[in-house]
Length: 305
Image (tube, rainbow, N blue to C red; front, side, top):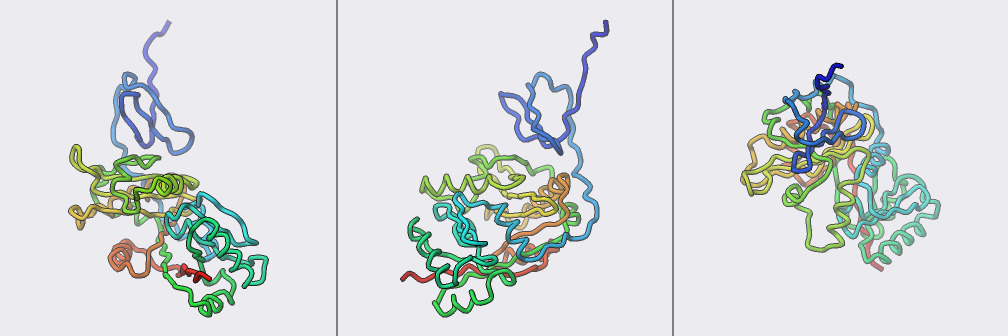
């Protein structure tokens, strides 16, 4: 009888190693968990060699809908082809009416319904306006109402070059959840329990979500964090934050390169992100990483009656 030990490989992302054992997330399939005493040997596998591929084709409307899936509101309700979204006030994206297509009502009535829906939740009534995609007469009506605008750029780039950028990849840690350390650097955290709960639900929502962290010294907060959502051929990058004292050291690039490599593992070939038009620092960073502007959309705040 052959009683030699049988060894098996667990190849993937090591997401945890604690008193309960180890958890590895493979390229496909469910996470693999096992006790530490079963570990015989391990080694670091190089980043996935992302293949060259053309940027996926996606019209602005499609990208807006993909983005909504990657940042899903806690509460959603259709208004014709529009979607009303609320998340206790956590970010405009998760607390605005996505006005794509026909609302199924005359425009004035649709905007009144939007205002009423958000008033019932004690939230300002924001409307996400995309051109093309939103009704042509919507912008004119919002201008007539004196709506306040907040422009946002949607920027895209091929994924493969991004996956090969930068150094310091070995410092980046990946996880399926945003733990206390990750959240400690996220600048949108508040002391309101309802908002914090909504934030966690939104952050962890999406088809395939990954959180990246560059740990600080023992007992210190992270140096940098990031988030990525993979949805078919597209990978959305967001929540890229670097501690003020750790900036200009390439950490944001390293984070995005590791997240890009992980996205390529899951079949993505294109990257996109959303950045406020007035955020010159972030725009300069993304310019250097090869991102170009696909389209612009606006958040318009309906005036209270």
